[in-house]
Length: 281
Length: 310
Picture 1 (cartoon, rainbow over the protein chains, first blue to last red):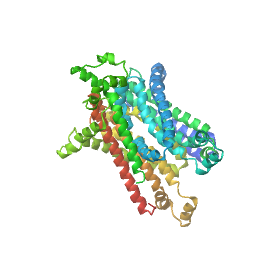
Picture 2: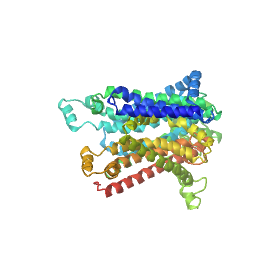
Picture 3: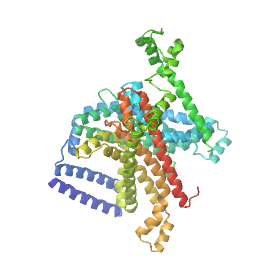
Picture 4: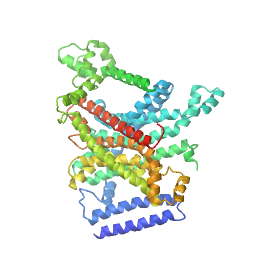
C-alpha cells in the first residue's frame, strides 16, 4: 500500500510541477518543452510501478517496469538477434524496396494525367485497407525467412508512399514550371531540380506513415511462420510460456525502434525540406 | 464522375495483370498435378523442376498452362475464382437463408464490424476529449501531444497478445473487448489531431466577437469551436474508421480468434485454403469501403445543413 501512496504523491507533485512549468515565464524555452512531456512519461512509469507493487498485481498479468528493465538487461543477446531478424532484415529491407518502388512508380504514373486520375482514388482506397491480411499469403509464397516479411512490408508501405508522391509531384505551381521552361530545362532537369524537391514534404509524409506500418507488417508476418527468432515469434512464444516480462522487453524494443525510426525520418525531412514554411522559424 | 473512365481503365489493367500473373505463379502446382495424373512433363519430377524458371516451364509444357487457372488450392487464385468463392460464402448462403451460419462471411464480417464500431466509438471519444483537453489546457498540450505521437510509433500488434492476456486475467469475457481496445488505439490518433486543428480553427476575431457578446466558455465552445471543427472531425473520422478496421483485423490475426474476418484469414492459412483467405480479404476491403462511404455521406449531409457549398 505504501508504494501506491508514494506513487500517487509523486504523480500529484509532478503534475503540479508541470502546471507551474507550463505557466512559468520559461514556457517557450526548449528545455521546458522537453522536460514537461518527459516528466509526464516518468509519472506514468512510477504510477505503473506503484500500482503493481501496492496492489500486489501478479507478474503474469502485468510485470512492474523495474522487472521489465531487469529482463531487458539480462536478455540483451536474445533481443539483439530478434532485432536483427525482424527490423534489419525484414522491416528495413522491405521498407527500402517498397519506398523506392513507390517513388519510381509515382514518377512513371505522373507522366500520364489519365493514369493519375484513375490511380489516385484506387491508391487512396488501397492505402486504407487492412493490407496486413496478405501476411499468410506472402509467407506461403516466399517461405518462412525474412523474404516473406520484407514482401509484406513492401505491399504495406507501397500505397501510402505512392499516393503521397503522386500528390507531391503536382505541388509545384504553373509559374515555377514555366520558369523552368524559359530556362530550356529538359523533363528530367525539371523533375530533379524543381518537382522532386517540391514533392519532398509530401514524400516524407508518406515515409513517416510507412515507418510504423513497416514494423507492424514485419511483426504480424512472423505470427504466420518464422525461423526460431524474430520479435513476433518471441512475443507469441513468450506469451504462451507466460514469461510476460520478456514480452514487455520486446515491446520496449519495438517502441524504441518505432520512435527512433520516426525521429530519424523527421530529422532527415528537416534537413531536406529546410526551405518549407513549417520548418522555418 | 470525371474520374470514372480512368478508374475503370486502371482497374481493368490490374485485373489483366492479375490474370497474366496467375499462369507463372501456378504452373508448378499444375504440372505436379498433371504428372500425377499420368501426363508427360519436361523435365520429370517436381524436384528437378524447382531449378527451372517458371517461364521456361510454361513454354515447354504449354498444354498444361490453362490447368493453372482451375486449381482447387492455387498459389494465386484468379479474380473469377475469388469472386465465386466470395459469392458462395455470402450471397448464395444468404439466399438459402443461412446468412448467419458460421461458414458465412456475412456472419464473420458482422463480428468484425461490431468490434470495429466499439473501437471506433471508444477511439473517437478519447480523441475528442483529448483534443478538448489539449486546446483548453496548456499543460495537457505540452505533456500529452508528444506522447500521442509516440504512441502511434509503437507497433500495436506487439501489444495485441498482451492485451488479450491481461483482459482475460481481469475476467473480461469475450474476444470482442481486446479487439476493440486495439482498434481504439489505432483510431484515436487521427481524430485527436484533426480535432485539435478543428477546435483551433476559429480566428481570434471570431473568439473576440463572442467575448463582446459576453459568452461564457461553454457557449463559445458549443456555438463556435465545435461547429467550426466539424469539417475537420469528419475528415479524420474517415481516416479513423479505416484505422479501426485495420486494428480489429490485426487484433484477430495473432490471437487465435475463431470468428471474424481476421480469423477467417488465419483459419484459411492453417487449413491451406487460399480461396478462403482471398475472399476474406475482399470482404474486409468491401467493409472498409462501405464504412468510409457511409461517413462520407454523413459528412455531406451534415456540412450541407451547415450551409457549406457542395
